[in-house]
Image (cartoon, rainbow, N blue to C red; front, side):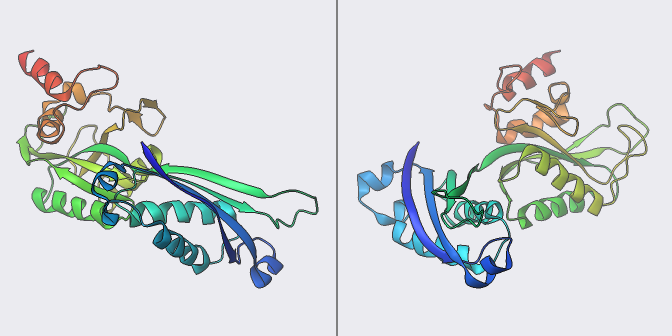
Amino acid sequence: MDKIYIKDLEVFAHHGVFKEEKTLGQRFLISLELFLSLREAGVTDDLTKTVHYGELCQLVEEEFKKESYDLIEKATEKIAEFILLKYDLVDRVVVKIKKPWAPIGKPLKYAAVEVDRSWHTTYIGIGGNMGDKEKNIKGVLEHINKSHNTKITKTSKFYETRPVGYLDQDDFLNCAIEVKTLLSPLELVRFLLSIEKEFNRERVIRWGPRTVDLDVLLYDNIISSLEEIIIPHPRMQERMFVLEPLCDIAPYVMHPILNKPIIQIKASLKNN
């Protein structure tokens, strides 16, 4: 991946735990690594195909001075988020903030914090069989798109499917979405649970009726066995109501454990 570097942009700001830091202010040095494709800019000599680093420095300084934080960890996180949200061309950013005047009572060159943040691609299955099913799913899509940390990039068709496991209930309406997100897997699943709560999802009967059900199916090529989130979804390869809509938007995405594309997993399930 190509890069743009900004090294030690000097900014005077008012971040720090101590009262004097917030009132008197101090010097900070901000370094950036932006990961993006520079091929088109290099071929066309067109400024709009890259990031204008003069503008970038001006905007980063304004953002850095906009609020006062106790921790440079917070300030660094905010700068990384700002850049990824501001510049669609940027896939990943490394932000390092140095504090040369850190008030620790010891001689040092600087204290610093560095974060590495990027956009991630995740696939989410959505279903429900209570109330106005289509309205509920569309409401979920709106909620996801309203968050600045998540952007829906693809949506499958809606499929009406028979219930699985617990059969004494109405048919489901299902779809799948591709989402670009800044959230970690754990943050993402907590965000989705908060949306389920907004739609009054109740877990009374396993595989029973529900207003909405949101499942993280895949997240980049990560394999995770955290208690709160298992990735890939452990039963997705057994469920046609997951694979069919997922095939609409990601037929050739590889399952990181089965090492097969989704379209092949769907074909195998259908044949069996």
